[in-house]
Length: 115
Length: 114
Image (cartoon, rainbow over all chains, first blue to last red; front, top):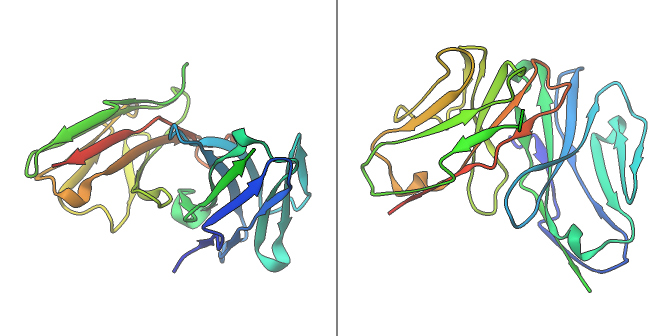
């Protein structure tokens, strides 16, 4: 069963629009971590954020913000005032103690920001 | 420390040949993970090591695949009798035991089996 679901396969926005990437996860662990990674066309995985299961505070980093809601098992990612350089594939991932904290990735959301 | 290094960056091999990839993790990270990523998909977990011990293997890791981390430092991933379906990006990542300091990924080895 898919543990991390990113229902949006592709999103296309015009520069300066806000965009939210959805992530829904499934776990029975009480201790787990959630991540977002960016994979630009060059291919490397760029770490964006890590949250642990005990910290539901939302986080903002520049134009990026994350909304973690345990009640809905969601960890959504919003880019404010999108830019062309934000074009990439974004992956949400879950790590659980019962799987050695290996990352379980969603299938990714491809974001295209056009001028 | 310059991060996680993987070698080679690209490998083209004929079907049936054996290939070996190397990963050098961040030195203070005792966990090392191997992932495989095919086009249009997220990375899929293959196996991980804590120090030199291989603690878990995915069912994706068929008996043609073997990974080692002999001294708890660098790791190798070998694929024997390669098949076209093995064509993918093979990614290595390292972390501390709980991933609290995050996972650092290498740039990957892109394997093409022709």
